[in-house]
Image (cartoon, rainbow, N blue to C red; front, side):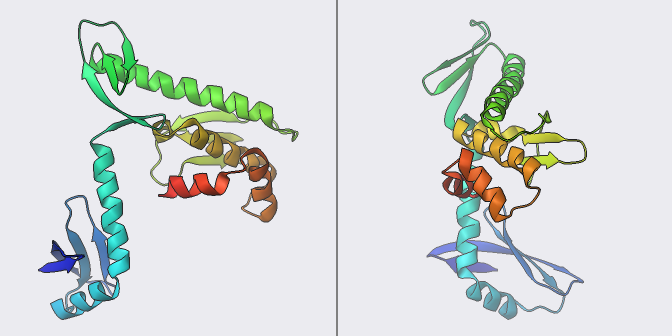
Length: 211
């Protein structure tokens, strides 16, 4: 099945299961994937697609951004080409290129950079807080759905390692956000007022991170 969206023809992959609802996704292969009930006809699917063109356009745009990003290496808000050069020692950043002696050397440097930068920004931001709070334990790991998490029970803040791809402003915002949860363990007006105290542009930054 084919579907025309904004003048572009897309393949529609239909997967039928014994479920009640119909689900539409645009996946990395650039195709529209539809999961529906065995009794759902192509006419019904076409009707759903026609009624949700704006949502489809957003899905396509998001997937295009993701595909473009995968072709590049991002570090602190800038994109770089990785060049492996056995003649150099360590890792060097020159212009829009990162030179490394080997892939292993680069991977170690990258992990060390995540720890170094996150630690530095965490200490800096924590020291900016006027509120009397006990310093949480900082953890770093890759997360699929969150940029940061404050664990009240263990008094830990976990940062998503993928934040290293973004600029310092966004890293700082996530740290401020999680530190503010120590005082307001919710997303109340008081919580956002506290975030705003240390990050006046938080609304803009939140939108950029969501996009």
